[in-house]
Amino acid sequence: MNADDEIRLLAELENLLERQIELARRGSFTGLHQLAGRCEPLVAKIMAAGLLEKPDHKVQRERLAKLYRDLQLMLSAQKNAVAEQLKSIRKGKRTLATYRGNMWRPNCD
Image 1 (tube, rainbow, N blue to C red):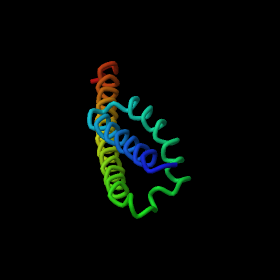
Image 2 (cartoon, rainbow, N blue to C red):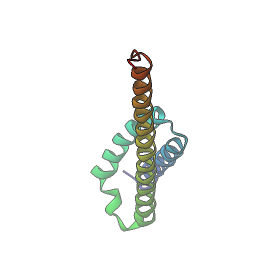
Image 3 (cartoon, rainbow, N blue to C red):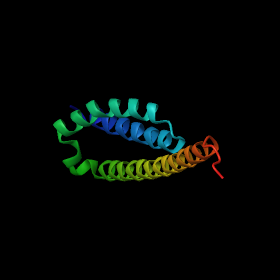
Image 4 (cartoon, one colour):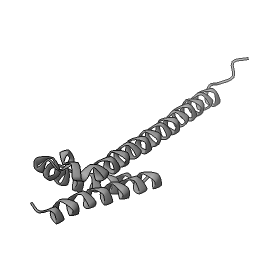
């Protein structure tokens, strides 16, 4: 693999990670999942070639590490937001079930 191919692979992975971050920011998890599938073969090629260990790719390695951290933080924040929404929905369902149960009981007073 020549230097141009190495740079192209690293740039492609960087681009896919940036797009994943943007999709996560917008809450588009289907698109995010599709892009993640496209990252896997790239990462395999990069790892097989040992590109990230090469000193001339230090800048790209640091940028990729930052993008992965950013993506992880974005997904963690989205996960927390979804968990809070589910908690709120469950609470609302319990409240509705309680009211529904009280409305249909005959008044025995």
